[in-house]
Image 1 (cartoon, helix red, strand yellow):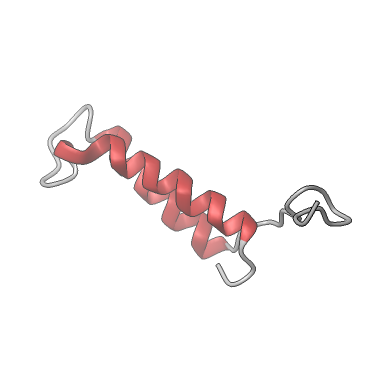
Image 2 (tube, helix red, strand yellow; image 1 turned 120 degrees about the horizontal axis):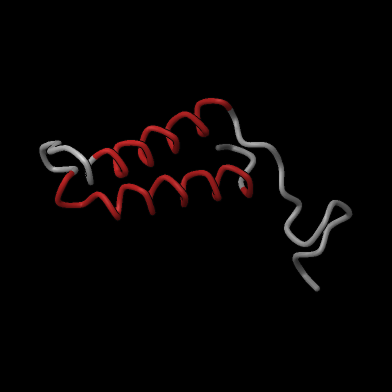
Length: 65
């Protein structure tokens, strides 16, 4: 397999602190927008949560994030 490395299938690593914080802020904003009105976010809360998860996933796969 082309993606297999010594540490596992994709060679996951711990994301940087900034990457983790950005993903956490996106996810929290998305969740909070279901309980209170936050301009622009309330209409797209689901996508904020998805974006937070994608940022976190990319942070574990890409060394530069």
